[in-house]
Length: 193
Ligand code: FE
Ligand code: FE
Image (tube, rainbow, N blue to C red):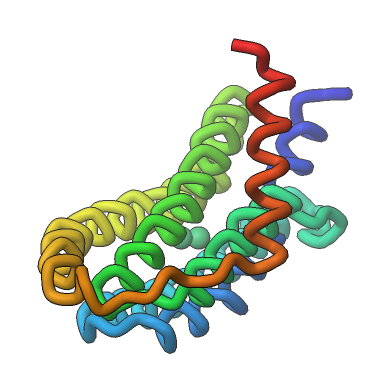
C-alpha cells in the first residue's frame, strides 16, 4: 500500500469524524448550562462545517471521493460524550463532564490532522497541507478555549459540591454503568500490570 493510499484512508476517516461532529455539537450546545460554553459549541459547529468543506477541497485536489470510511474512533468518543449528557449532575458539574468529553473529541481530531499533514508534506501535496493546517489550527484553538472555560467551570463545580453535600441521595446504578464497571475490570485484568 502506497503512502498516498494510507493518507486517503486517514482523510476519509477525518471526513467521517467531522461529519459525525456536525451532528453531535448541537447536542453539546443544547446541553451546556454555561452561556459561554454553549456559544463556544455553537461557534465550533460552524467551524466544523467549514472543515468538512475544506476536506472536500482536499479530496477534489486529489481527484478522489471523500466517502468510504466510517470513523469508529470518533463514534466511540461521541458515545462517551452522550453519556456525559445523560449525567444527573448540578450545572457546573454537568458542564465539567461536557468539557472533558469535548476535549477528547478535539484531541482525537488533532492527532488525525497531525498524521495527515505529515503524510501530505512527505508527498509534497502543498494544497492539502494548507487546508489541513487551517483545520488543525481551529481544533487547537477550540481545545485551548475549552481549557480556559474549564478553569472557571471546574472551580464552580467544587462550590456546588459544598452546597449540596448532605442533600444528595445515593443515585442508583444503571445497567450500562454496571456493564462499564465490569468491562473496566476486564481491561485491568487483561493489561496485567
Ligand atoms: Fe473538526
Ligand atoms: Fe473540532
